[in-house]
Image (cartoon, rainbow, N blue to C red):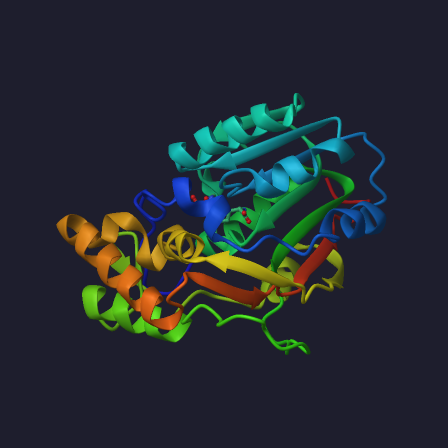
Length: 280
Ligand SMILES: C[S@@+](CC[C@H](N)C(=O)[O-])C[C@H]1O[C@@H](n2cnc3c(N)ncnc32)[C@H](O)[C@@H]1O
């Protein structure tokens, strides 16, 4: 949990409808890499905690007998269920709740994944619970974008003006990053390796999944990206939401009058840990 910050259920309020469109996908090879490093064979169960609209849950559904996506945001879960229906995925179920509510009667798992969600939880407590929920030898999986990398190819179109978007958000919401009803003075925490080691996990490995492809992004995609984020989620703007969106769209028109942008897909960083065979 970020220092000095209190979780509340408005954290991603209003973001679900924008999430899939706005966020860049994980590197396309991430499921193959995970299947290989975890030796997935279609058996066992996956729990995806903080699953949002089920992007990782559904991408991995074919590698498990059952996948369970858990999230405290009902709109995210509704979106996940809708996307499962569109994809014809029949071995996914959805559980409402926070990671801190685990084990929540969900049973035992071969793998428990947190994709861009672990930092929002009470990490020591959650890691200890997940250790209990995993089968012996089971895996804790952490997915995020690789932070430090430099794309090698030029972009054929302007990049989304992320710095200017940040300035606009700060003009509306103040200088300190917002999150739910609070502010994140020190950002979100890292060093998952220390947390997982403290909990008793072993065999920490990093598996970078290369990317770097150039993606076309429309002005609507960039607006969706802005509203998909906890620090500029729709609820934060209150009755100035339409005014903010108007200013955001003007800024995007200035940067690219035809509304077309491009950006590089960042590599995905997968980190895995194992539950020791002898524990539990
Ligand atoms: C950045 S989104 C990631 C969504 C999805 N895992 C993905 O990678 O596409 C973070 C998600 O974590 C959820 N979340 C926030 N706090 C949580 C908590 N304490 N326990 C479980 N999920 C939480 C949010 O509701 C949101 O859907």
